[in-house]
Image (tube, rainbow, N blue to C red; front, side, top):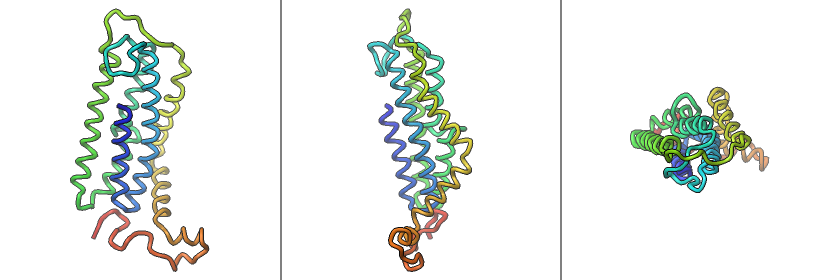
Length: 216
């Protein structure tokens, strides 16, 4: 399931990149950071859940209750909120940036529908998985797995990074927007690498693309 959600995140990134505008590329860079943190957190949480479910492992089927289920459940919920783009974490900010940057495109309705429906389906899948992992357990079974808390440190650290990305969204957005403009400025790149005057090189984006993401 974590792998499928990775595909969904990559698809969201490709939608933003395909708009081919500085605003959309800046939004994609912001979402790339968030997506990397969120997907990595999900894989780490899945590994910890699998280690605590005995022979069932990480399969989505009924098993013994989880040791340290409260902490793992909290991590799972926070990761689900981040991946599906629910407020107030960085996934919501990143998707809003992508939707705003593609609002003026001719296919904006299709883009918005795909992103929102994919987020809703991801939320439904994570809710069903969470209810199975944490609530639908074998009656009378003894909690399985280790009680070592050190394995929870990496996902907790990544969750903290995701929260910080949401709290400092404005300065991070300014940085990603500046990075997007610089990536599109081939003249500046040529001047830095080849020593050519920036004015003598080509324009950063095609003439038919406006910097606000709209097309004439």
